[in-house]
Image (cartoon, rainbow, N blue to C red):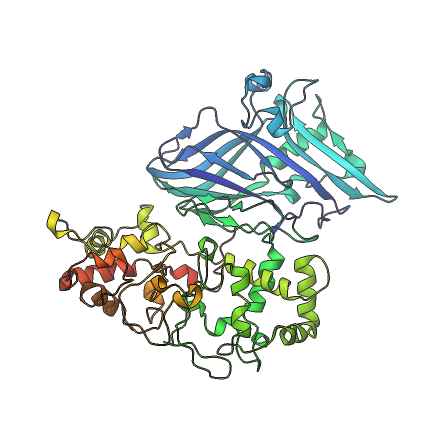
Length: 561
């Protein structure tokens, strides 16, 4: 298949709800699935004319067990319209009877990878479903291994999409449908798909009908890595995997705070809880409004008791890539950052013991803490961890610019000219004329994550990064913000001094103030600035507006799979 990436993401479900491994299903005998492994082969895409585009030697191993993977990679979707997808569960006879030792380490058909090869009998198990169930006397077990040539399954599903762009197809495999009509007591608790086994034949028919396409996404998503040895998720919680595009740098998540559905939900609740403030009037969301990409429309954020700060609240998104927090970087981790506004005298002005007392007095909140962390207890550490989990899920990656990069839309001529200005050096001596934005705002995150003096006149009471480090060389340096969602997050700069993007562009065009710590990428420009023309300024603003992610401002902003 062609050049664009293709990714298949499978989700085991029971009806419409996600499968919880090891938990009782709402089915007769309340079965609990402890193993769900599949071998796939023969991926094919149906063109609009009815012909099939087949991928030679395509295989995938899926496992719903802890540490397993439920994703499979294709080799791409060439340009054109498609109306369906097809794959097999299992492998054909030539592969099934071949020597498994020929497959290299990491290959889906290597027995050390899949654990599905019957070494003493020859051949692979195509799909293994194992678990426990309740009968009249006690818990019992079941072990269904679907295998052998008569049970090679073919799944064909309708789905409309256009090729030539990165593509993720999300599919459900429904265990309720796979086990439909099966009575453990009557039909038996095991099958190894021997010849003439009616249970294996029934499972084959059921499984072929158990798949459906859930959604189509014109992007391909990465699997987050951990920055160290992973801490096990709390008992009774369920993993939360953020959907992060592969166009972004590899994301690294904290290993000692695994994301879970319960933890993220608790963090979201706390983010909107006004009891974190001294007079129960202000929440985190009060200064970080979702419709503004979690930023504040006021120039200076106002505290719970109407205290006026000296900085504009930074927007909250793509925080997993940040190495420090606040305009001056005084918080080295997100977990430390989330507690600081609570105790800051010009923000929430509350004490942590008081916050804990208020939360502990609410039985519902206390129960949410117990669910999120596997045991009772409302503590400062858990408060910080829950907020951290929620904030790490705020991923913004679906602007018009992103869609244009994936060939799903086209920028206007003005926007294209603005992009060219954005990524072009200002070097008139060599005949190069650009806006030179990319040095500080380059890459797919549109920020260097560094601190820079961008030529603003300083307020006497705010010297930036120097307040934290004490270094004269850090005077006037502030964190370089991302330009994603920039049109949604006015006012601009650390103190909100500019109300419009036009004012921002004019500053960089002609009003940069020189000083000893001015960033070299600005200090190299002529004294009078780069002097953009009116058309260039308009084009640059037009491009900046393409970075708005309207989907991110909707209520379900957390990106998950």
